[in-house]
Length: 324
Image (cartoon, rainbow, N blue to C red; front, top):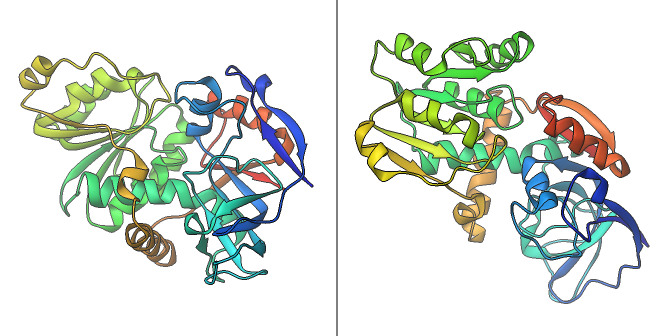
């Protein structure tokens, strides 16, 4: 028997219900994973609200760390007792245990604890593909990172500094600005008090930045357009401030022949080889100290609704972990 979150309709955090589920034995190719720590991500909010459609009734969450309890027929690369992690794409991580396709799991090394893994896997792999395979940031480039103290933002900052980029971050308060600087940001703009695009132009001698990593969305879209250098790239990877729609190609031309990408993690983590290479690079950056999986707060698993409220209100810092 397992406890699992279920949503039967989209809406606010109050739509998250908890149910008892009698788990069957793992099917062929499956593993039963007992969760120890579950990662909270903004994509969970998108699924809950219906911004990203998901099957209803259904589960929430995709990121977790735990232990293998049983394996189905044909599974040879995992055994009961193995420590494992997952970051999706299968939903339903808000649970004490669940059955998963074995090929969506990865072994956790001994030097990465469960809460670190739950805080890092999805966000860290997001940072990896955004920087190294989508934007292909080069040493010496200047990059604007919106929400630089957020769960993904502070990882982006540390990773960018490690590969030799100059980082301009935005933050909503003095406290978050300090966190962005601690992560390695060279310049931090308080976007509620300052003209972000104007400051970017000032910092760059009027040129603007060649790469913008924007996880906010609609609320920062115009700022991103106004901050980009000629032939610059805007990578819009999230919707925390609303969904960007109605992109005007004429505006991209007028702003300097800009490039725009709206990437999705699992288009970069399709094959087993891509997943293994991305995760290996993530753990490499963790071990060198380039990135620090800051866990700003934890909630009990069944208090996930409270965690969602805090996340949407901007009252979290770094990563949030749900503890089983």
